[in-house]
Image 1 (cartoon, rainbow, N blue to C red):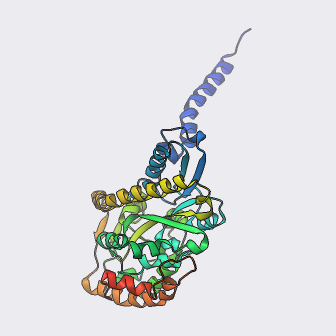
Image 2 (image 1 turned 90 degrees about the vertical axis):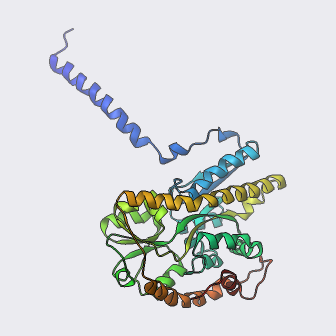
Image 3 (image 1 turned 60 degrees about the vertical axis):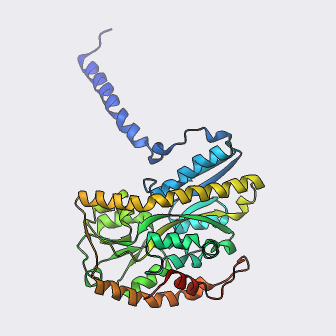
Length: 362
């Protein structure tokens, strides 16, 4: 049977197209999680804990979830699988907090800014110029009574807090240079869905745009926002500096991920595994926190090498921000000082204790 030249040519083209399409389809199917797969088969785990985070595990404070996963697998001899899902795989933080409260998932590394939605006491670390350096954060964590009370902020919601990791010092990424407070007041800064942040920006006379983190990339590209309230580490790693080529180091607060878990789920674990679970979280978080400061310095250096310009505000503008931000402490004091039946430590004025301990001065 003769085969026409036209048919042969058509078949050849189809084969060629299939060969070319193969790699493209493979790329489309690739998942950002492929680089972070466990080196073990989790299918035999007796207990599974699904844990969410919105950001990239290239950030040490986010990567902690994979370190916990692997260490927990080792310490429990494969009994607990810590099924960690970063990259906003389960949605924005407010949405995921509600999933956690309902028990749809078991854990979350929630940002300190979003954490206030279910645990207002967590807002103490977001207050301007209170815990505003790596050194002050270490000092706060080392005070067990004060830190444990902080970590119990969601106990009344059925959610237990175990520990923290960090993601650096907050400042302003922007499309145009922000060298002064006057410059900042011309910028549409995205801030997190958090009451403390809204109060702070309103006090500073800056009109913020409240927005979930997953919506930020498109908003930056379309001009819905032209600035971002975040840390240089996060901005560089998550490629926000592709659109915002300037960063102002305001350093008014430390960014934290707070590792929280559904308490009802935790109680289903046998006592020995509960103990191992808690110890593993503490050990990994302590180690990761030590790496945070070095990573911030590294990412700033990388960003500068790539052409991002960094600025600091004048002493006068910083003094103005401190002064304008001071009333925010007291507007939010009742939320921070609120006590619940689940609290074992019952200070009359927790915020004042933290301020005194930190040597806070407006």
